[in-house]
Structures are given as structure tokens and as C-alpha cells.
Amino acid sequence: MRQPRSVSILPITHTDTRMDTREKILSREGLHGVLQEHRRAGRKIVFANGVFDLLHVGHVRYLQAARAEGDLLIVGVNSDASTRQLKGGGRPILTERARAALVAAIGAVDYVVIFDEPDVKPLLRELQPDVHAKGTDYTPESVPERELAELLGIRVAIVGDPKQHSTRDLLARLRRASDA
Image (cartoon, rainbow, N blue to C red):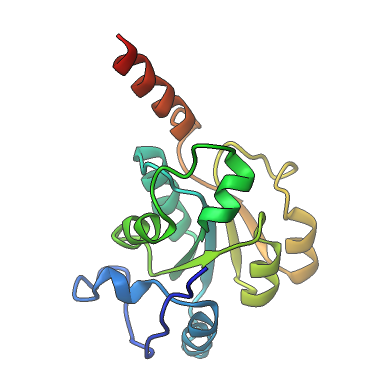
């Protein structure tokens, strides 16, 4: 996987419209430096993650609700390889760079990082956010990273609207429509 470029630390808020979305997509190394600066400023860091293939309203609401849990929202986007591993053949529809750019364009999102692992445990260990936000398709008990988050002192928050939207369902509807 080609690593996203690292950028210099910029003081931003989620309402700063001057930042180019490409500047929000950081390498893991670049993200570490940025987070140190935000921690020194006393900001509460929230981490959310997902594939975000064919972005839909459920994704947007999930990320908006995640952002409401703190001062800064970092979003981990699964790489193309980890998406194939998780979702199977034919996925992702969009490349990791395209998915990261779409997520970065959402106003609630401060930074995006692409990751290759099939789960976010390594990122939670590296980034140690204050909050790990998961969608409403999870319960506090079913979050795969729950035990690690507890061990690291990371609060888990279930956020977003009820799970009534999915990329899988959207793709199925599109396939049915094209077959008609």
C-alpha cells in the first residue's frame, strides 16, 4: 500500500473549510505528530473506523455522532486489501484513496488514516484515542475491540442512527435495478 503523505501540523477545527481534504489524509507517522499537538492543547480525541465503500447517509450520521463525542475525529479507512479480506470478492467498489477522500470531505472529520489490518486493534494501541466510536450495528458487549479499549482506558461509544442503511443492501438494490 502506498503511504499517504505526511503534512505539517495545522491548528484546525471541524468547521475550518479552508483545509483541502487531501491535507486531512495522513500517514500513521504523520498522524502521531498531529495528535501530540492536539493532546497538548487538551483536545479529546475520538476514533471511528470502517470501509466506507459507497458512502451513504448512515455513514455520515455515524461520523457526525462520533464527532459529537469529543473535540477531534480521526477516521480509520480500511485499505483495499483489508476490505477484500473482510467483504470478499468484488469489493471495494471505490479505491482506498477515493474512499479516504470522500470521508475527509465530511465536515465532522478532522483526519483520515488508511490501515491494512483486518481490525483496528493495532491503531487503537498506536493512537490511544479518548473515545472509540462504533456504529449502532454493535452493542457495548459486541464491540470486537472492547477488551483492548478497556485495558487502554479508551471509552467505547455506540453512535449514529439505527442501522437501516448498508452498502450491501444498496449494492443489492442496484443489481436488481440493472437486471430489470
